[in-house]
Image: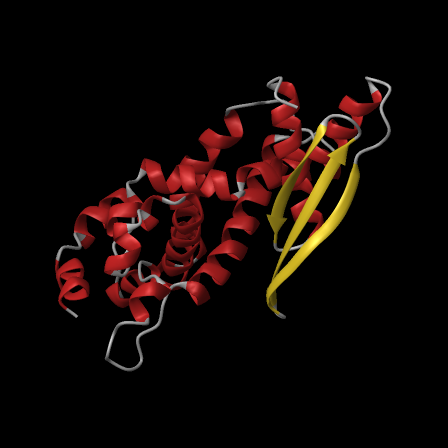
Length: 239
């Protein structure tokens, strides 16, 4: 495919390696980490794989290193506070911010249709590719190489707010109770995706104050996303 081939030729891997702080011995790993499924559907050669497997690995590597960073940075905090910090900084938004900071989007190989729709700038795609790159760095250089990329970027995210973030469900509950309202009500409204990779959609409602929905890979994650969406609306005065 001409569009795909031209996009492959335009990749500047040495420039990206400088931004990542890692020189790849196996450049194919980095190519794989930057290949979106939309491109694979249009490629003719066999054996080409996208970044989903590396994304799976990178998620775990990121989690281990960030958990260690938090454990050392906040020695007096309990597990609950550390868990809330962890969820905030390894979230899709956190990953997308790091990806944007290193201009990862322009290196992601996607189909022409995906490029035309602005897919390379979408937070979800940026976050997934960032995790895949972390997985590729780990496989190519080991845990120290992955730590060399992760620590400077995530240390900035951790340092942005030294107070442990509050769980969105707890915050919404306290918001409602503070106004004499019943507790927020959650309802599962959709369950999609493959059995091993489900996507939950949950709606939350606060009496007389509106509702909002959120999605996540678990019911709890979807509830948190819905609570955060409604809380932000209410705090902005739109609920």
